[in-house]
Length: 217
Image 1 (spheres, helix red, strand yellow):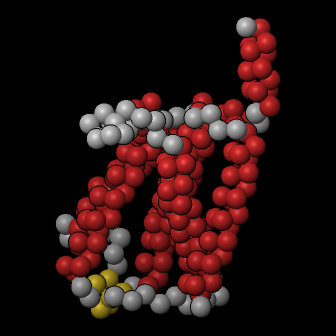
Image 2 (cartoon, one colour; image 1 turned 120 degrees about the vertical axis):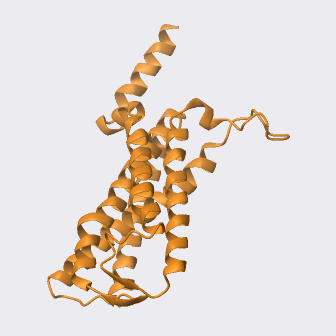
């Protein structure tokens, strides 16, 4: 018994400060869910209902825009609730009503891989958007926006830089912290976690560079 206890204590001691914190922290999932629901309701659903705040111009296809905003709101809200599932025990087990596999544990990679891809997209979207919008305001590049009959470009850029892109980045960070908690709490080895973290950060960096270049050119 003492040997087992000593092994567990040694395992804890090998954790970095971030890893110890991430293994215990569940609040990023709840804050991420709240962040997603607020954005879905007060931005996407609001715009789907015809709201114009944050849209400084006249769009070409209003019907398509409203539908796209509604669908985006539903997806964003769903993603928020998925974060809650990542920190709950029932989120790691297939529901009992599912035929043949009900009650079985869900392999961690089935949850982690799509979550990390979405997280990488959110972070790259936010970072690249903030960089290119800042370049536009500084006069380094000129951004062009399609799908508008009339548009106050300066106002839209400010909305993106100060509101939309920070939301994407914050949501990505909260999602990433939740994924880190899920990985560590589900018993993944420290070597696999650290290797995966390095790969993930490299992927986010490359994706961000690609997004910046694709926007500019």
